[in-house]
Image 1 (cartoon, one colour):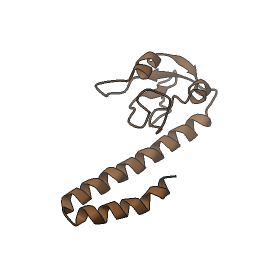
Image 2 (cartoon, rainbow, N blue to C red):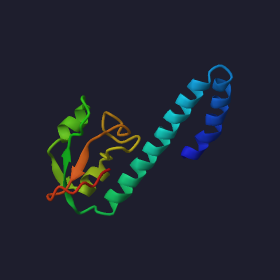
Image 3 (tube, one colour):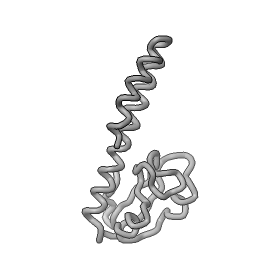
Image 4 (cartoon, rainbow, N blue to C red):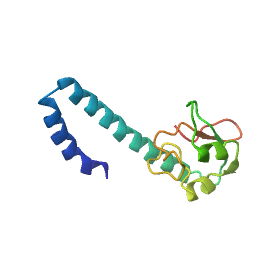
Length: 118
C-alpha cells in the first residue's frame, strides 16, 4: 500500500525543491520516517499473531500524553489474541486506539518482562 505514495512523493519533492532545498529534505525525511513506522506496525502485528496464546500486559509508553484507550488498557492482562482481535496494536497505523496506533509508544510484555512490541 505504501508503494502507491512513492510517485507522489517525488512529484511533491520536485515542486518543493524549486523554492526551498531545505524543505525538500525535511519533507523527504518525514515521509521516510512515516514509511518506516508503517513497517514497524506490520512487524509488530505479525509478531503478535505468531504468539497469540501468550498472556501479556499493556504498559503505557514514555510519551507525555496518552490517549483514553491506552490509559484504559494500561495494566490489563490478556492473551495476545485478545489485543489483536480488537486491533489494539501499538505502532500499527490505523489501530483501534484513540491515538490511531502509529505514534503509540505503549508496549505489551509477558510475565517475565519480555516485550512483544518494538
